[in-house]
Image (cartoon, rainbow, N blue to C red; front, side, top):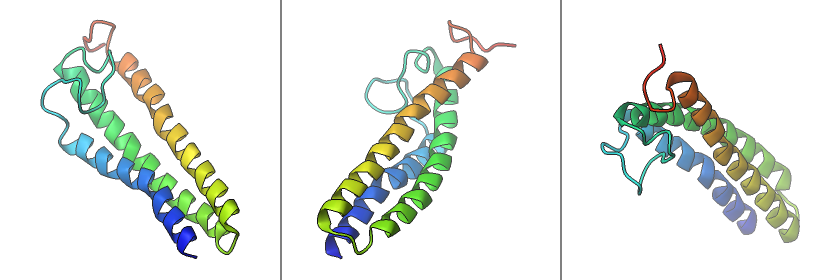
Length: 126
C-alpha cells in the first residue's frame, strides 16, 4: 500500500506542476524574454507580444490539460490498488510516460496558435 501511495503522489506531480505553472504563465509570465525560464521557442521569443501570447496560450492549455491528466491519472492509479509492486511500478511508469507525452505535445498546439496569430517576423496578422 505504501508503494502504491508513493506512485500515486509521483504520478500526480506532472499534472499538478502543469496546473501551477499554467496559472503562473497566464497571470504573471516572465517579464523579459530570456533563455532560462518560460515558454522558449524561436517564435515565442520574436518580440514582447509573441512572448506574452505564447505564455497566455500555453498557460490556459496547461491548466486544462493538467486538470484532465490529474483526474485520469488518479483514476488509472485506482486500478493499480492492491496489485503487486512490479505491476504498480510498470503502471505508474506508463502513466508518467503518457503525461510527459501530453505535456510535450502541447508545444505543437502553442506553436500552431502562434503561427495563426503572427507572421514569421512576429507581426500580428490582421
